[in-house]
Image (tube, rainbow, N blue to C red; front, side, top):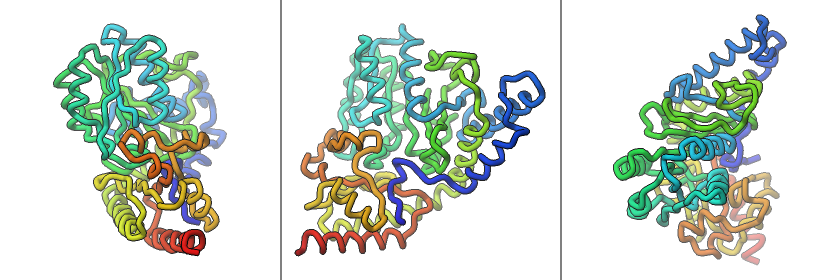
Length: 379
């Protein structure tokens, strides 16, 4: 099997499996909120996991909150900030190429009467700075929402320039950043990053589904999304799970080591596939400076879903649009917003890699693409 759909989800690593077994032992399975010694032990374990997670992300302990997924983190950050900071302004700035978790939150806010201003993006998927400046200069911007690495094209946000522009023209504007596809693939140090809130997902870094992290910079105030017993300082009520938090930490430890080496290996795979596919008249849609873990390509003569199922015959797995939108069988809105012709976008397939993919898999992929063309187009 060749699995090139890691932006949708990653397979669970052996280290995570082992950690889950360890943390489901009866001696550490009590409710961290219980007053007896087993509860105290579970609470201490949970706080230790939180401390280590914060350390790896370059954050303070009190800035890290465990959630069920990045979508929950995004909802908490975006809705919570606007709810808590009504005097900060009535406008939110973003782009139309964001993940659905952000776009649907913005649509929700729009229905509540907030003004959503969308910044234009260029062919490389990056916000056009002049458009950002124009929207900021209108005033009243409480929050800016962006994605560090686009999940469909791998386009990398020039966050330093974006942050500098936002803070120069609107110093009180808070910044929320979707870091899901960046985690473990590029260095992230939240203490020097410049974002006020960030979301992360466990199942994109070889943890299990059902765990995520929300970063909220110290001093930033937001309303909680989930109310209840007041766990996690009231930010995210619900019984804490050392198992899920520990699974996230185990995965984070793995992907935090050897980031540069893994990126270099992945870049070789990406470059090889770019060349070979371009030689076969495929159109490369990911920008040249995209994160190497994502390669979006349009195959002439094949609609995206057709190519996906052809590859599936050979036990090769890729995706079309984002997994969050794929069931709708729509053309990628990310590609369309970036100016890609609809016919080209309709044939687009996303290859997404993890540090565990190999050059041998890439070479086999090309051989199978050749067979598919010979079988279906060259008769």
